Length: 112
Image 1 (cartoon, rainbow, N blue to C red):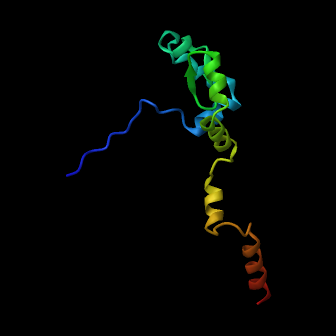
Image 2 (cartoon, rainbow, N blue to C red; image 1 turned 30 degrees about the horizontal axis):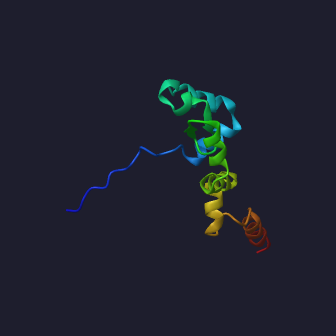
Image 3 (cartoon, rainbow, N blue to C red; image 1 turned 60 degrees about the vertical axis):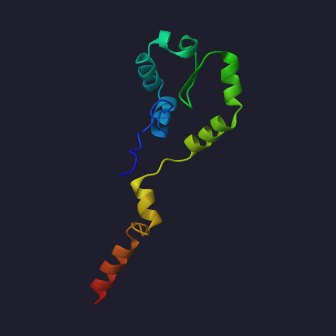
């Protein structure tokens, strides 16, 4: 039997849907920050990137991070519309007729 792969959670950040909720509602973000103890965070929790959900030791590091490729990539992903069940069904061709076909079938049945 092969080696069991463990999920690494040390560098795990918040998921995109959680970050979108943080951006849309300041209440959601304050609730998340309230769960963290400032003494345990880098820079006593003063420098935080909302989009990447990362803490930094200084303002200089935060500004450097915001100029970087990883931050810009994450911004692009967050700006994209979230996937939905309706979009998935439309991609495979289900539910795209908007009821037009059903109306046509009832009209055709009435004519016969």
